Length: 157
Image 1 (cartoon, rainbow, N blue to C red):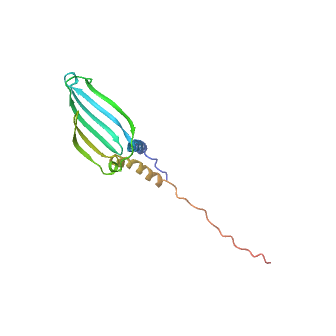
Image 2: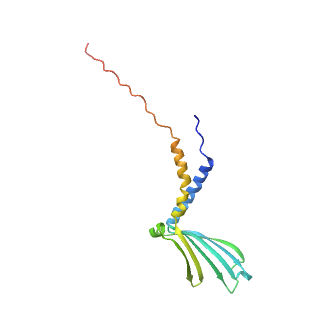
Image 3: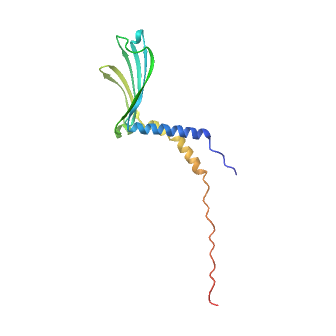
């Protein structure tokens, strides 16, 4: 009986999932992310922005719309990388803290949507788990060797 080779797509999804899990693990011990902005209106006076970040054990999304009287922002879309800032993990955020509410700041009103990091990590474990299960099933059964008892011969003659 020939063994069927492991699916290449399963291996690809397993590698992608493991890379996402590594990024999420780094997000447990610090804060980093991206900010996407789009300036519209006359001379870029209205700016819509969304910040997506991993923040000490949770995924945080801020959305805001800012209206300025002067067109200081460039017109059109922009993408900004927010560098890594180390931080201690917060167990409360990592396990059960969910947020979905507006926040009033001096610069205007923003909407906060945040959830624990495990909600993204859990689906990322599916492909590696299937890969490992199939891999362990394919292992050959270990077979020992037959033990033969030698008959005792009497030395007395």
